Length: 194
Image (tube, rainbow, N blue to C red; front, side, top):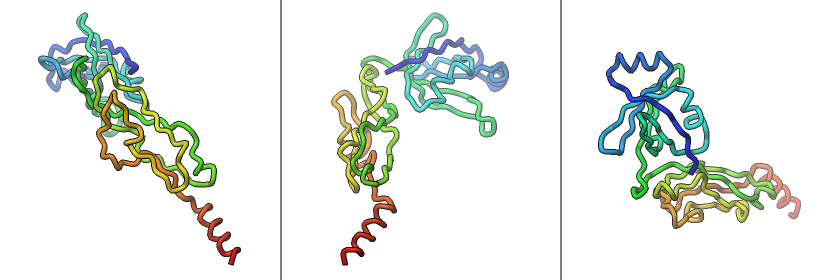
């Protein structure tokens, strides 16, 4: 999985006044959980642009005080009006600990049902996956080249031995539905045969 490096500095005080001063200076207060104790740090707001405002998923390499930590974004808080980032929580990754992440689904191929006039419904754009950090994929490929009108692609068809998909087996990723135009054409054709 691709990683983005975030360089920060340790926060000395974690109260409301200090946090407000950080935000006014263009810094985002952050907390790194998962280790022996929670680590409080701050980083420039622009450092999170490629991590937050993207449909892709990345791990983060957090660097401060000469140490480097691998982590994933766990929670983010935005300002209700301005949409500025108020606070970010990270979870530290360890090579031997399983981690859960929402991974984007990428459709592969062309469904014959779409060529016949059906409409594609892409229901699950991200899937929750549990795996070791080294086995986390950038994308989950979902092959739709066998979907005809009325067919569905279930999560069981994208299963992989490297990760566990945390959705029920009957969860539909994509399906090809009959469009109104196809239904009208079928009705007109049926009336013409009578």
